[in-house]
Length: 111
Image (cartoon, rainbow, N blue to C red):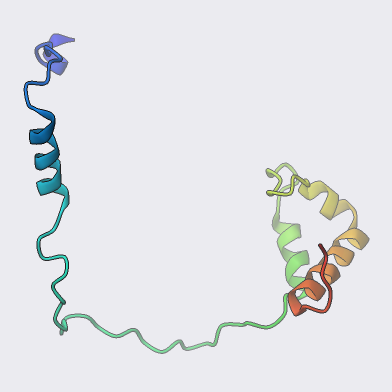
């Protein structure tokens, strides 16, 4: 073990608290922090997307497809409901999807 980790340390800190704080301040601070950065010619602006992101309402088919790909033994989400419930109760899944859609639209308050 001594060969691997070297000689045993004494465990005594021989610097004052002020010296340690000054050292940490020097190491973890940046004197040029407030200085404004100049434009960089090397940065390339991103391309415009070739396909627009779909921001439409969540479709039931999308939910259904995700549930079909999910394993029954997968860990439940934050709500604690296992995926087995959603897979074996399609009416419940559709009802929850409808409630979620209404909540997103702001038509109803579910709280």
